Length: 136
Image (tube, rainbow, N blue to C red; front, side, top):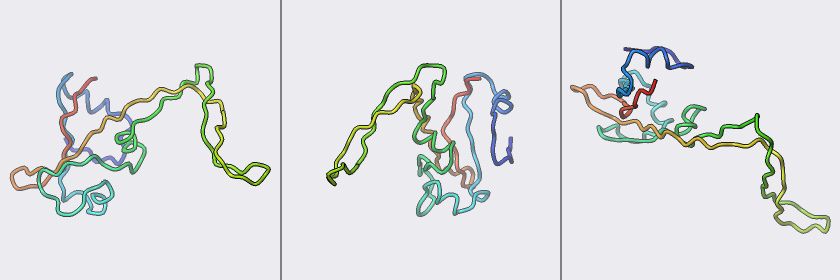
């Protein structure tokens, strides 16, 4: 199945076509991808079969894929956290100070770390993910 959209907000319509716990591969031909986009996500030099990279954080989805994200719990009470700041005191001396502030509690969601690989399929060079399990 070929998807021609630039942004997919809900993958349910695509994953429902596959059985539960079936592996799904996302594949695109190299000739359909501009070389500047390949450099932007992290491919450098010759695109030889077997090169695997974790794409750079370019947008919000690739940032989540590379770094993970925090889920803010606005239904819970706020917590006091501290961050260090470089400041000047009233004597003119510089130093670090821990400044408290209130924020909603957060839970870290680890990054999925989906890597992309250059593969060769009957002479056609493709960019593909490893199998992603369909959880439905």
